[in-house]
Image (tube, rainbow, N blue to C red; front, side, top):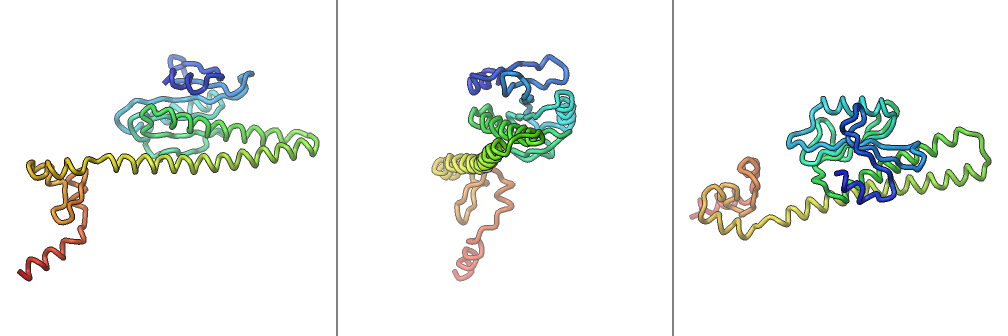
Length: 222
């Protein structure tokens, strides 16, 4: 993960701090002065990330007073949907599930949370007295950032939908039909009426084929 982060963000300072208390696994600084940063927690469990790890992340956010990302590489996260953003102690936390060390997913997540943090910093600047020209410029930048954040969310939704569609297309249907003629366990995952393929027997059991009644009526007529 450390090498992926450095490859994606070659101009940012990134530290591996997994051995230090209350600092998550990595710290990424967003500016040269190190006034803005995000902490990154990386999990490799094959089961959903438990609540105890979420409580630890909350503590890390409180201690560092910064935004955070939790990447679960091979599983979901308890009570958190994929790419959920929530606030804790006035900071934002982004949860990303089933990443599988995909650089595109990692970059989208970091760019997303970085944009939110930058937007918040602009909001804080507005509290200081300044000229109307500067305020107008900040407003224009803020509008541009809001538009980009919205577009990034749409791109994230599109990316995961396309990924799911691509995985479905990768199902070897022809091979499956061939094997179903010779192996009973494969045949049990295929509808005998419409030949639709299912990944599990449980999915097949829940499926209601529209051709069942038609086939029954034809048998009765015979």
